[in-house]
Length: 359
Image 1 (cartoon, rainbow, N blue to C red):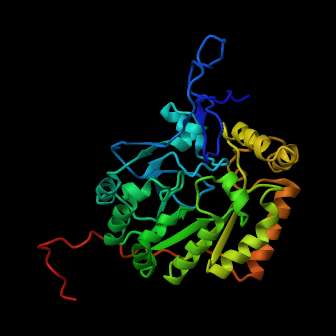
Image 2: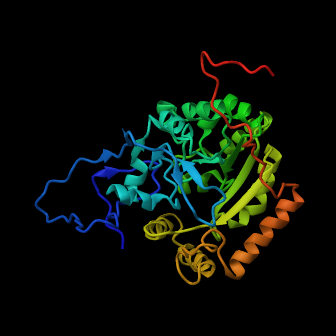
């Protein structure tokens, strides 16, 4: 059961409603009114952003479910506040709540570009595409102020290092020239998360993320610049956005997306109770039905963390979802394969005083 909401906090455009304790905390405290305290003046809960200076920036993984082995996340936490976000539990490692803390206490890494260049310059480094935005969105609202992404892209571009991106943030269009330059060398591809075409539902699920119409514009602008775009119909939530699979794919294809992917909703660790609470607040009449269908894809549980299952689901529910997706993808002319990345030209950029090649 979630902790009660703080009555002194006024929430505006937030996904979570409370601050469940981090699962690594040994001690937990809950406030309870005893009738003696004067009521606190209600205050609007605002986003707090702090910076850190990490010693490394590239994260490695060996998961068989993920098509990349390295990634970069310029931020911890995400102000978009998507209630279903599988990254919420990662805030527990900071001693912060995966609820409101995840979307209101953001950490930025302004030295990311310098660290990236140091790491890829090592003699032992072996090139392979770097994935950006795999845990939290690198183009979330904080990026408009900190501008970490242009530095990362300039380093990758100067070294001819392939890169992929997952985002729903419109600030990606600020860096359109950089993405287009790298795409022209077969070194960049962008994935745009589009969960619904219903602006009202999007405001509920993803309260501070761009509206669906804006995300379609992002696909359109990137595609016009010849940047390969993958539409990510993820996560798919039964009853809520699952009926829109074909409509989302159609709209994204018309906007210029060339590849597509689908992932059923995942509810790891603290995400499950947060999501259940959100359903009861926004869709009380559908909550039980939605969770029954989610569990039908997850072996009767809220979540199935097993490799090979966590991104796919199982059973009739998941099979039908995939069949619909594949039929629509084929009918609309999407490519079944992601664009190839050119790793052959990876090399240090020329420096002042370097001897030029004769050829």
